[in-house]
Length: 119
Picture 1 (tube, rainbow, N blue to C red):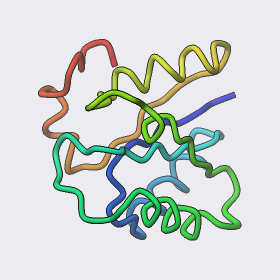
Picture 2 (picture 1 turned 180 degrees about the vertical axis):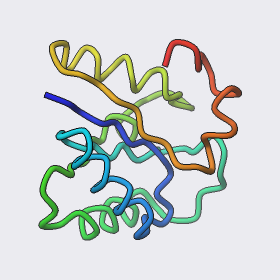
Picture 3 (picture 1 turned 45 degrees about the vertical axis):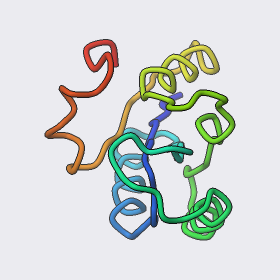
Picture 4 (picture 1 turned 90 degrees about the horizontal axis):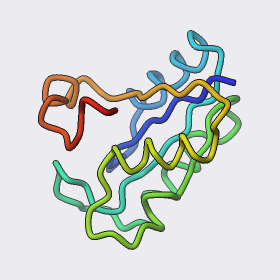
C-alpha cells in the first residue's frame, strides 16, 4: 500500500492542506496520514493541541483515504524532527511504499531540515 506522510503545524488546517492531501491520495492511490506537530520547528504555535486535533478531525471527516496519526503529539521529545517521523512510519509499515508530502512553504527550505538527505 502507498502511504503518504503529511506532517506540519496545521495551525490552522485549511483547504490548501485538504486539497493537496486529496490530490496526493488520488495520484498515488494511497492513504494520506496527517501528522500534526506538537511543537513546530519553523512556526510559532497559536492553537492548542486539542484545538488542532479537533480542526483536523472536522476537516477530514467523511474524506476517503485521509487519516491522522498522533505520533508527534505523543512524543516525549522536546522537538520531533521529520526524520524521526519517517523512521517511525518505516517501522510501523515496513512493507508499504512511503511518500513524504510537504507544502510549498517548506519545499524551498527542505535542505535546512535535520537529516534531509535521509528523508
